[in-house]
Image 1 (tube, rainbow, N blue to C red):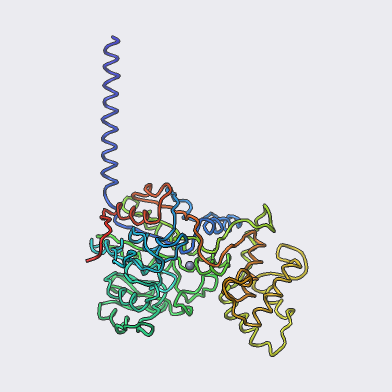
Image 2: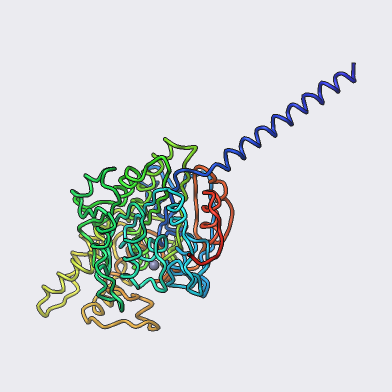
Length: 490
Ligand SMILES: [Zn+2]
């Protein structure tokens, strides 16, 4: 009797073991099937503090937090480059696009200048469609590292030529910085002409953009209103006729979708720029837009959950943003950040510039006070969070004098610590305004703190843990079934 019970028990144990093995095998078989659709979202300069600032900004208004912070896999990565602890965007994007550690400024070449194949190029070779989207110029360091191989990120003409000869299917967002080779030692013709010869449809502005469809073939699309660096306007400055990062992403998904799958990289590039300038409200608005673009990919994922991978990361942190400030001690006032109406860039380059031009010799600080109220809600009298303290008012007066004097501010000086390379009055305003929200900045450059990565979909669990930034590229390649080897392109 006891023996038969033992036998039944051991049989059921065997059944359970066999069942478990079958489950494991089928899970492995499923996991070894590479995803058909792969999205890599890179928030430039989007460290953990930037993600959390945007999250809290939403939650303080009673809204849901960021979509990117809800993904099931969550990790952190180092960001250092080969020849320096604090990375630039070129070395960081090379690490993420190729799995190779390189020097600052290098565009998908190793430290010996050997070109290294990118995830996007591998995807194209495999027959997938490839899309590259960015809110800054499409030849800027981060997007360039997916299709170009150059010794310097500043070789915009050479990068433009690599772009139009890449054979990739969709380039969208900002414009080209040197299509004609005006700043090149060896101009190679007009990149737009070469693009047309290579079969690209070039769509400029919202009207031309909205009518793009699957019959448009390979596409280069950019907004007609670009800043002086050929980037999209900041979201805080965007108008109805501008094309947003979200729209560029949605259209990309529509155009790239095909039975062989696609790889798409989407960069939120101006999170970085606004953090260089220590402007948190502008950075948060661009982070929210980046998260809305991510939602477009997430909607697609929900239709194809077994075939899609989405990875979201930063490339490094910018500005040394932190969520806390000596003056506000344990308090945070994220709501304050809603008050700001324009980016630091529009304030210094248009509003304050216009004000200065209208001065006609008299420069009373009192005259500029209405602008502080109108664009940042800062007041010199009254009650509430945005009333300026005496020392804040003094700091603003000092910076105002510096701005009107127009003196060049050199690195290594006390003034550089105060204002960086920016308009002194504007940067002092954003400093004080951010401090009132309980936020602090330590730098006008990048910092070396690790960044957060989150992921959802096929192989997402691989992104749990702490790893190097080159592992992001290697992990994606492994999941996509590509071989990672450090070898020169042929
Ligand atoms: Zn930067």
